[in-house]
Image 1 (cartoon, helix red, strand yellow):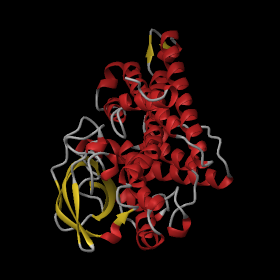
Image 2 (cartoon, one colour; image 1 turned 180 degrees about the vertical axis):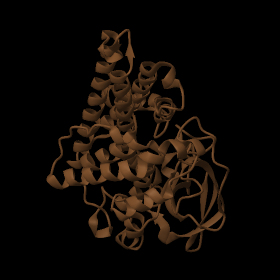
Image 3 (cartoon, rainbow, N blue to C red; image 1 turned 90 degrees about the vertical axis):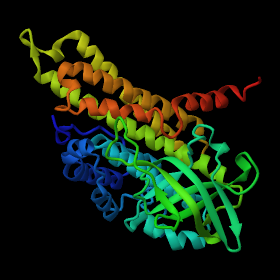
Length: 390
């Protein structure tokens, strides 16, 4: 079964315009994304031309203001676009999610002048962004980052190393969190760093289990000089900006996870209805039918969870707890569903002739990025039970 054969997902969309948008996205996914996904993931090729197509179609700035080249779309719609793209190829879905994350700081906290100057190119001008928070010694404990920015007249000089950066080495701009003051979260400031800045370089991309088409690399900042006009928000506000961005970014990962899980389910169902054993399609056997029922139920539950969080966000209400829940549930679901899909295909599922083994390898990273699922549980517990007392 190819991704072209995936049945459409039944969706409840807020407008006719949103339905037309999802139809466009599905068409792009089927024509431009899915046909070469397996080959390019195997060779580790990043599909930059696909992102050019997405940019020309107005899909790189969907949840942002049309005044600056965005699409004025609610998160409820934007996330379903991500889901469709991730179902066709996770590298593309994740890439759009990371780009949206990288643009968030300027869109939400930048000055009017900054937004006028930079956002049109970021949202609709073909640029691709990256988000730089993690470091070799500070992943989950992001507030302990060591990259430092020192004031020098009207400029800042940034020195340090960022790690696990999606689009590292190929991004046109980087949203960088650096220490400008005291230790801890209050001493961190955000900067918009051009991809061609002097002193900025990328290490060799990591050799990953999955998502091989999406480059992940360390970024070295060796005395990178940026003007104060590229500081996002106030000095010391960077950690607030970073956490606010991650709340939305977690919803992006949740939507991508459901897209991947849906693709795995569709593959498993197609195989099970075609494969015959003992004179029957294996989809007729109760044990396997129960597996499929559980897979479908968890996917529907995950979709409902991320959409409920998105609707809270769209209404301007707090959604951090629901975002953490959505990220936790949807990525755990993706891991379970892709593993079960491999089981349904049996030996074939373990070969590269079918996409299920790739789906399973890709699902694992979703439980790690944008805050591990252990961190999500800490966030959820903090909201439900309050701060730890010990």
